Every structure is written in C-alpha cells, then in structure tokens.
Image 1 (cartoon, rainbow, N blue to C red):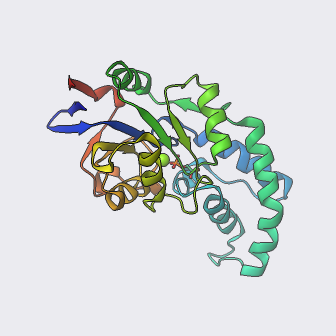
Image 2: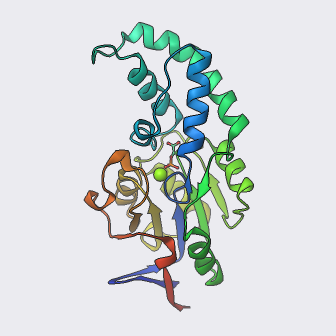
Length: 237
Ligand SMILES: O=C(O)COP(=O)(O)O
Ligand SMILES: [Mg+2]
C-alpha cells in the first residue's frame, strides 16, 4: 500500500491503471494520418484533427463510424444506414492497414508522463494500461515509446465490453491481484471515470486529454491534475 498525493487530495493505492490515448500519449496525429490516408483511398474528403479529438476514446469502431458520418453528412443530414455500412466494410481494413503502418510516428508522450511513471515505479506501485485502442496497437505504441513499466496491457478488443463498462477495469484488477477500491484509475475522459465509478476504483483525470471536446473538470471524478508530474508518493508500506 502506498499513499499518493496531489495538492488537496490523497489516495491509498496498491496499484494504478492508466488510460493510453489522451492520458499518456497525444495520438491525435496518428489518428489523423491513418484516417486521412484511409479517406483518400476511399475518395472521401479529409477530416480535421479538431473534429477527430471529439470522437476518440470509445474504440476504433466508434471512431470510424463517427468519422464516416462526419464526412458523408451532406447539408447536415446523416448518410443512410445502408450506405454507411457499405463504406464501413471498405473503410475498416483500410484504416487498420494505415494505422499499423504509422502507429507512433505522429504521436508524442505528454509532458510530465515520464516523471509521473517514474515516481510510481520508484515506489514499487504496480502499473497497468487499460485502453480502448486495440491491444496490438497499444503494445506496439508503448514499445515504440520505450514505456515498459506496465505489468498488464489490455486493449479495447481484450474483453467482451470496453470502457465505460467496468469489465476491463475489473478484469485488470483481477490480473493485478488488487482490490478495485485500492486500484487508482488515471484517465482523460468520461469513459475512464464512468468505468472507474462502476468498478468502485478511485479515479483521477488529467485535464489535457480529449474527453470528447469537453472539459475533464466537468466529469464526475475524485481529482484532476494538469500533469502526471504532480503525483507524489508520501508513504510506502
Ligand atoms: O478509443 C481509442 O482508441 C482510445 O482510447 P483510450 O482513450 O481508452 O486509450
Ligand atoms: Mg483516453
């Protein structure tokens, strides 16, 4: 058990679970590059990064449907379900191929991440990563950034349901051998906070991530921080 502190807040934790996109790594450049290569291949108009930022966080399938709806909407009208489904069938393999080819090349670790992870690692706090990104892409991205401190990495395809369902966090706690109430979730969005609340994990949100274009401070969470460097360990036992 360790005591983690932020100004004005204390957490007693046995382990910490981190979200990936929007929390550890700014992957908007990767999403933009892969999506726009896919859209060009399908002869569809490109999508702006600002729009993508509001659609990231609920996994690849949700992102792709949101982007296709966005670029296919004419005069504010959504495309028919039949048209969307037909284009999705072509878009999915194209997006997977382009994402795998560029994964990590247009992404950047957020300031303070190295320091925050080192603080927890030095205190011997086990860490895991639970993301809605596909597991293979998540593992490859973490490897390319030399982030090798995670005992477990679970992606959006690891379990039957993704965050905001509590299942990924509950399964991760089981894999870590820790009680949810002593396993801190650190994320950037309402998906992370809702999953944590439902799993009974304490939850801390970073304020710089995506959160569907909304302020993370408006989300029900236990605390917020502007940088992982703010995390301090005041006691270990
Ligand atoms: O939806 C995604 O691919 C990213 O999800 P994450 O914020 O859970 O890492
Ligand atoms: Mg996120």
